[in-house]
Amino acid sequence: MTTPERLTLIGGTGSPYTRKMVALLRYRRIPYNIIWGDPAATLDAMELEKPKPIFHPTFLFRDSAGAMQPVCDSSPIIRRLESAYPGRSVLPSDPALAFIDYLIEDFGDEWCTKYMFHYRWYPTEDADNAGTLLPLGMDVSLPSDLLRQFKEIFTQRQVGRLYVVGSNDTTAPVIDASFRRFLAAMEAHLATQPCMLGKRPGAGDFALHGQLTQLVGFDPTPRAIAHAVSPRTVAWVDRMEDQCGLEPQESDWTPLEDMPHSLKDLLSEIGRVYVPALLANANAVEAGEKTWESTIDGAKWTQQTFPYQAKCLKWINEQYRALTGSDRARVDAVLAGTGCEAALAKP
Ligand SMILES: N[C@@H](CCC(=O)N[C@@H](CS)C(=O)NCC(=O)O)C(=O)O
Image (cartoon, rainbow, N blue to C red):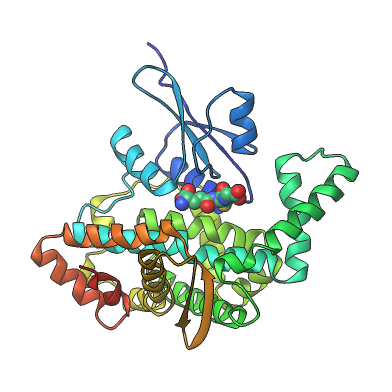
């Protein structure tokens, strides 16, 4: 009997998407080999062609001809793994619930990452921490003089990129207020059930977990905020790291109609900050503008246009339109008054 091949991925300890996927692989009991390192350098050493764009993590999938294909982007990879490895699904079987999970996953990947990047490089103390630890995460034996050089170059580059995600002196208080409201919503929600949509994790839990491994476990400023605002979230991040011992049942998804009110608070945060950003970004992509400006939570927001996030909005709408009329009505009832409805108005 041949043992099935272990799945290989390349990524970093300081990468929220790597941590999202490692936790997911553990929960799904998918045998994996992780190579801690830079995907581009690792693929070069393996003489494999690099995907464009290349991200942490990069997965290696064998194609039908038996060749290794490097693949990036966690959300489609999650769907691919669902068909390749049956059981312990992270996608709720109720399509209406699956839509809410999708929305939470997208928010985790695309908005919570703003908390992550902002706190990592905006406060001096955090930039100093990341500048030292990220290169060491790639090579713990890095000689000290090289570490100093890397730290300087890398910190300068990342701090210089803050404006790209919309982090600046004007938006810093908006990002901070959003992070605190998000944590307060998590605190209330986790007091009612251990996962976002019941007693078993969905893709959305893993997306939030990935970003929170950094916000709680790596960067000092958001760590202190998380400990002060939501001890339940702090404990949740550690538990989510390895859920291989959970035996999920179908009944562990909370029926949409029985969700605690705290889910609404989480969705309201998505509607308050992420949905306006998605809409303004999509308009900018349509108009061919390289940057966009909008009002988010009452403050002026400027950032670079991301074609990828216009696709996110399109995918959300495709998922929504694929629902039957009655499931759409169930989703509408949950989203009513959260501000998320505005994302679904695109033709
Ligand atoms: N949508 C992608 C995003 C992954 C991503 O943005 N990864 C970051 C690191 S956490 C990255 O590799 N950025 C490119 C770079 O830093 O050069 C996913 O879900 O996997």
